[in-house]
Every structure is written in C-alpha cells, then in structure tokens.
Length: 217
Image (tube, rainbow, N blue to C red; front, side, top):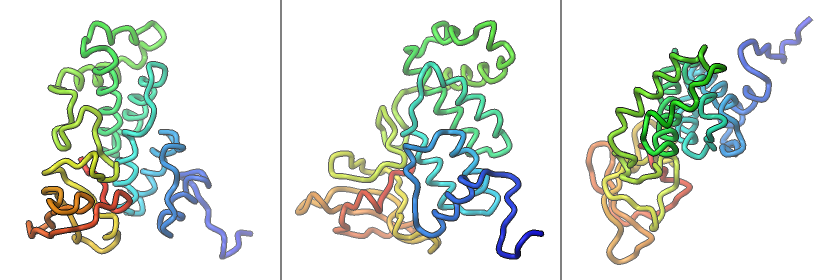
C-alpha cells in the first residue's frame, strides 16, 4: 500500500526529480557536473511541470558541457531522441554542429570521419548535424559576438558586451522585470553598468553582479 506522503515517479529517476525539487527551493545543481543525459531528463521534467527558469538554466548550461570527438555523435543522437522538445533538441544539435565546425576546421569532408560502418544507423542524425554546419556562417555568436558563446555566463567587466541580452536572476518567478539588455560600462565606476528593461527604459549605475546577470544568447 502506498503512503499518502509517497510520490510515484514514472518518467524520471529519483535523482532527476530531486534536482527539480531542489531548484524550486533555490538550490541549484553544479551544472558542470551534470552529464547531458541527466540534463535532458531534467529539461523534460521542467517542461512537463512548466518550470520556466529551470528550462532556461539548463539550456544556458550546455556551452559549459565538454564535447569531444568521442561523444559529439552521442550529443546529436540525444538531440534527435528529444525532437519533441524543440528548444532542447535545437540547442543540442547546435552544440554538436558548432563543435564539429570548429574541430574539423569547418570542412564537411573532414567531418565525414565519424560516418563509419558502425554509425550507419545514425545517418539521419549525422546529416542534420552537417546541414547545420553549412548554415553556421561564423564561429562567433550573433548575440554576444564572441567565438565561445557567453550564454549562461555571468556578466563581468572583462566579458561585458554592449547590446547583449541578459537574464536577471534576481527576478525569478516575478515575470518581466529587471535588466534585459546591457548598454555600457559606467564611465565613473567600471564595476557598474547601464542597462535597459523589457520596455526599453534605461537604468543606470547597476552593480555588475555575475551571479545575478547571466548572458542569454
């Protein structure tokens, strides 16, 4: 007999479900320690229970994940396995394509090395990655203008990008509020900046807090 205090989890592991509960109670996981399969499962739960902030944080954590020649195909396969979760799938495919474009010097013929006899069953996945490689016009992010995208990283004086969009983590659960775009570093105090809100209103001399303001590309 199941106790009224017990919850039956049918579509995720206990660890993944606990991670979502912890996040709701303001305890974030160490994103760099989470593997992509774990994050994909966590995204599924965040989407199912409409935890928007968690979805955003998971997507933002992908640039910090280690992608290698040994696991890049696995990243693309995970993207295809989650094709119904479009933001997740698109981001994973982009991660795989950007790695291959960079690692294989943007040459499709070099990327064909992963198309071995063993990988024939994943031909569709490999084709999708190569199509994305062709569409990547530049190795720099169109939003933050950096070769290595700043998405999910905290805003600092060293990496400040005027015009970049950010997420104000001080506004979690409060709807549209806080800073949405960076404008310029304060001319008097380089540890402060000018930004703008959702409605375009400029705000001045905000403290450059990398734990609060995260790039959102």
